[in-house]
Length: 255
Image (tube, rainbow, N blue to C red; front, top):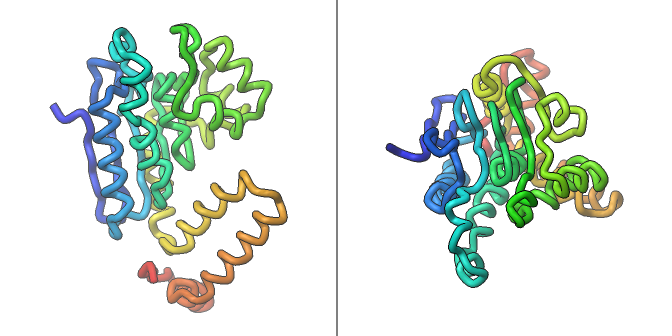
């Protein structure tokens, strides 16, 4: 059985599905490697404009594979350099939409936070329970959560290992939308909408937004202005303006 499924649609949307249902999509080394390779390939695939990341209808990912923790030493954990696997996702220039059904815990929650948009259904449960195993988050569970929801909520969640549901995640600002039913079809529709726009402007928006959050406001605003100015030299920008005036759908070419 393939532990990772990839579907690339004609409209430029790629769907990446974790497929270890017997292990609740636990993120073992093999799955992380396949995720990294897949996202590296999607990053350089000019046909792909947006990516949906899902674990299926019942569970997103229950976390890291705890079997890996039983015998691993400090040097072994270091030499794995698993940060490289995560960087393949975080460095992806294409918008990533996580469709979260069921549990997204530990590494699963961190994986969802590598996305740009998180769509959760009513069954979704989030959490960073590593402290209960004598550990701590190691793939952004403290830092990405901190930037998403602030210090005091983050401290409560990572120090207690408390799980929280989709509505709570939405109130905190961690989730983009909460829906009833399977989150994946809705995430795909959002991805299709994004894929219909100019790939250059979409990627500039993602890059500037991500870089700007850790910059001073003045520096981030300057970065935003420069990115906007660059877009005026693209064929897509001229096509978008012309299509608007002619009241037709633009034909973007990513140029």
